[in-house]
Length: 189
Image 1 (cartoon, rainbow, N blue to C red):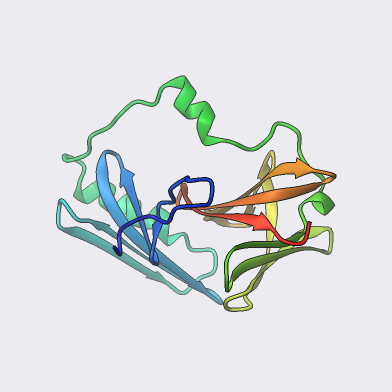
Image 2: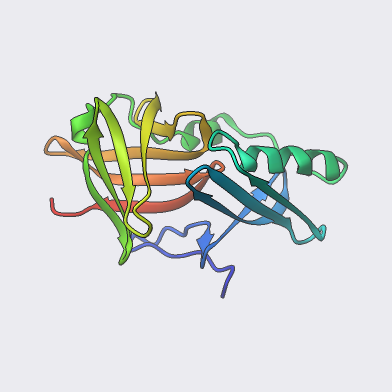
């Protein structure tokens, strides 16, 4: 049960399972979880079949513990990876951000995935600002490509806006470490 991904209303399955992210890295199964508060960052990445776990704690806001954890895994498990080449269609499918960049004001609003889990996106000093409902943490995000945004200096967390209707986006996909964590729908439209 702890490792079973959540199922969305549209029947898509998330990699997110009860606080854990199940995934695959270079052909090996992974179970991971990360944390962020103030300037602190942490991540645990478990390779259950290899019985290897990497844990990184950092006390800098610009640290990228997910990236560091996979660099450690690259060293520890280099002879065990099962590298699979992506086909051109798989590469194109990874970036689902629409071709046309949306205006910042089209992205603002309250996005919710489940009770107690929502993000308020607003404009603050000509930049998008995110407030997390569960801990009131606030941070700015900047456009990296198309309609994908990241916290400046933190490549671990990505926000991709889509589903433009009547001048406003209605879906927000959140990725952690390149894996889809959550899909949020705009409230009040």
